[in-house]
Length: 62
Length: 397
Image (cartoon, rainbow over the protein chains, first blue to last red):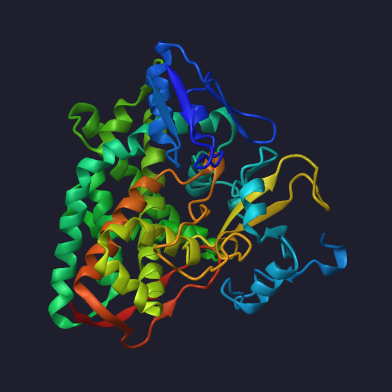
């Protein structure tokens, strides 16, 4: 599956990194970095990341 | 570039200090930061946005009890284990377990009940043409919303409101003299919370407490103490803030009646109305961080352990980020920091956004020509602010 982050909405709060730490991380400047192509086994975690994002900037494209 | 001589100084401990003041606006026009009695204040949106989430800063409230001469006891123990002040993996683990229960999809089934509650409270005072907004609407609404979410009988709201308000005294500068009262309230809230948790462990339902009891991540779950601490934080953090923000919101619209009429005509703008009042008139007028390491940022050298205040209302009305900063519920805006930001971004923001949008929509649909009706009374315009008494008169729509 493909992870899409709308960078115009993302504000680097980092809540997604708690939900799916192997997919999302903040770099040393606090800017979000993430994997775009993610194994299906991580779907629940990425969905949780999308649910808890304060800016609602994350979606999954199948 | 701001030179050392140009750096403004703000006396934030002065009882007369006000966020909505020319002195603060002048400081923002001169410089992106100011010196204060303790640490720096960040004034402009661009800098708040960057530094608030900078990993070289941590939450700044951990030492609050110690700053006020409190080094042990029930309040000290609760505060130092509270999500609000935890950092690193201790924080992330708790936050990871709590977050999903506060997501929109779990909130949506409750929205019709919030709507019914807003209508019930408004219909009680509507025939009078006047209302003391804090005690007749904002406080019961904010507290009963919590009761609904937690699965507590709504009739118990006065107990919840009393405990939340008393524990809220802990955030005031008079903590020392209020300490006995605060600790008695924490002890009472602990018993109340522990009873609720025990009940939900045996009789789980659709409520938020049951979700927290059942929260599990790769075999990890919240211990009974962690559940209790979280529930206390929720009651402490969820009531006063929403009550105060509703009062501030109504006051903003009272001062901008054309915006209130616009909202009444376009109820679909209620979510934007919430964002606009939180941007221009937030209850949390600053959020506090502390530097973990020495670092340089632009021309500023900040030593480790320095307090940094992020001024939310001041950055939210920064003309560089908001060219026409006055409240406008039809404008496209960049985000504000009324809910803080970063790792410690407000946990309950989806709830607050939804319940305040419902309240403002319902109020504007039934009331017009709002005006002050007597003597209003306010907390200081700094820290966490809002009306203590807000007597209003209005015409029925």
